[in-house]
Length: 224
Image (tube, rainbow, N blue to C red; front, side):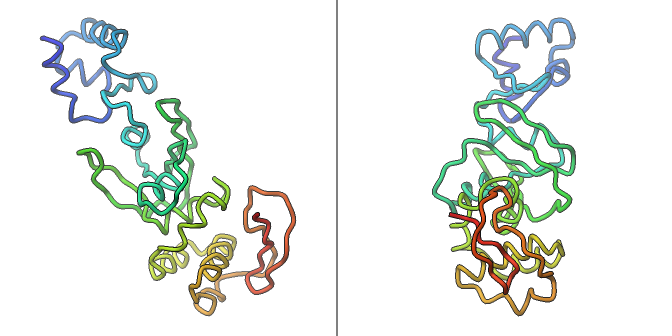
């Protein structure tokens, strides 16, 4: 089979494997040699062992490497055009173990117990799972500095955020999000106060510096 015919089978697949090629080239040894040759020629890209693509786009291929997963944190917020800084890494939430892959941009899979809050979106003629802005914000704490995603609070769905916080029921997340919601003009304290404790925690868990205390939310304001 001509190489062009093989490529046509995989133009519409973000990621494919040796087994996929073997289904078209009905000879595993030749399929393996074919993959090796076109990889050497630079016609395809290798993402990891036995994972290849025609697309040099980490955002596109990421969620096809580990399943189930969805794009989240600042990667999702950038997709939704809610932050100005362009991420240098693709962040994906998964119910499986943390993993990292090196590709056109590094791809970081982080484990979450809260596997929800995403939708299938259209991207480059493909369909991929991307977090809602509200869930992307929640996923960002302890992953990236608050300063990288705080601006996203300017344009969120308040009711959806409250729904997610109630579903998670974790005081530390609710306090951090609640404080930032209120900072950006949302009146949510009365709705959330019964879900929080008053042990002080840092607003940004990645920063050690001290700061003023917000008694209302039990937050140490340690962000710049």
